[in-house]
Image 1 (tube, rainbow, N blue to C red):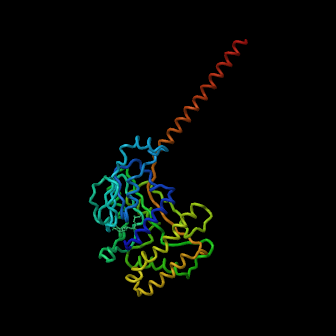
Image 2: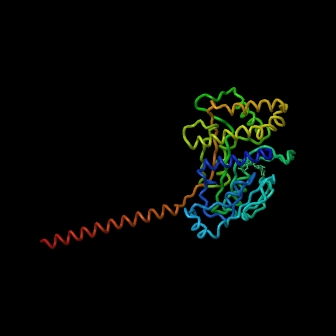
Length: 339
Ligand SMILES: C[S@@+](CC[C@H](N)C(=O)[O-])C[C@H]1O[C@@H](n2cnc3c(N)ncnc32)[C@H](O)[C@@H]1O
């Protein structure tokens, strides 16, 4: 993946799309007040920066003043974002640290150290630094090993969450033709992945790999991402608007070097084909959608709110019971009196 400004803007746009998808939240895992967070392949660092400033839900109050008073120790979490490429900003919240590191190497952090490890769209193919291809290919070669490292470096109570796009597209009304440029493009990406031994289409395997790494209670959520604002549902429509902008921008970012260096296409032909792909993605009569898989553990502990609710319900039930008993006693007394 290139790391030029256009690509960085696209990554920030995808970040916003994620935020719409997750209803404004930054993750799905039931993490509570984590103190140590690791973001693998942080990119522009936008997620790490947002999470460092994040007020965890139980600390959210409508009144900012009360919130700040009650959360004066916040942000207390230390957030580390790693990447091969040092493209992150230097003006960041004091609890964020960016490190240049290869997450496929042995992790330098202590074992049982993190409360939460996050990995979002880290599969890719190549790494450009100031437009020069560096020899190290930057995608995940061994997901099993990566997840095992996450498992070992998480505290026993910690959470791992991983999100990847399915490298495929779907349509329910036949507008996505099998002989169209975008279908060919998807097939080519997946073919190039097979050739390099680094498959791209990993999203649907993440859950199994997580379980194999030792994680328990693993669950998967699949999100639908329309390409364009064609759905009726307002939320999907909004996601579609963002995808309509970012998907054509990502075509060369993901595909150009794969076409030329792995599949052996001449650059001019690769560019021409990818121009047709972009043209197809901008066609508003096309009703296609992609999928995104988010895998994570779920918590087996009952949330505090549920416990409180049950306690209140129990109290009310026993109050009703005692009122009834009193009534019965009184009526019994009245019966006795009337005898
Ligand atoms: C598609 S970007 C996603 C960035 C970020 N996770 C986000 O969601 O905005 C993938 C990032 O992973 C980084 N990356 C890929 N392989 C890596 C590796 N082995 N070690 C560290 N970073 C890596 C790339 O440099 C790139 O910045």
